[in-house]
Image (tube, rainbow, N blue to C red):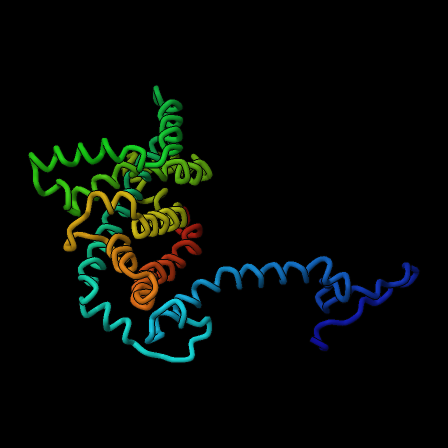
Length: 313
């Protein structure tokens, strides 16, 4: 820092230099002393407080997962002992078929998130690029539907899926397909977000593609789709996380152990004895977080590089 930061030299005939500023050799001024605390330093304190607030529950869950005693009273913020007994108990099946719940959840999350992103993207493209009768009313209707949570229609959804099951048992109650259909009711929930991204893309790109002979489908897939990769990655991640954490509907439509999701199955583990089962529950929570973490790390490159791909090619 000593060879990079120097005090600002006073120009000839200019007022006396400020003693609370440093000027780098490239000419950039940086505050120091009290001014640094007033302008920059307090932001660091707020950031550290936010990191501590967000990291405390994560550290506590990790500590409980590797604590062999596995109770609320014996869990410490900083783990003093290390054991995989909670993971062995969980994967051994004594608390329930955790592997089956894990696989059910991953399948549901993948299918529902892909379907939601696909349908929302197609609908957003139509609302953004086409002009048709009922366009404004359709957008307002989608916004109005999103104002009401899905569990308000639990009774109607339950009766509907029960009737479907009488005709086609594969999509009835206690089936992953039937529960997936229930979640598909919010398949257009990302239309407004994706449409806003579509609106920021110049229409000249569409016109240039049409001049070259491309139709709407080729324009959408070859020109527009690479440009909206960031918002697709974000909406896909949000949909994936929402399905993993969904409990209310899953607890009603999935009651058999063989078709439960992680949210329902893990709640059943801790509901019996919240104190002694904390370690097993924490171990399951740590394993649940792994797919989300890996998906986020994988989608980062699309979020960063999506804006530079598409129109140039």
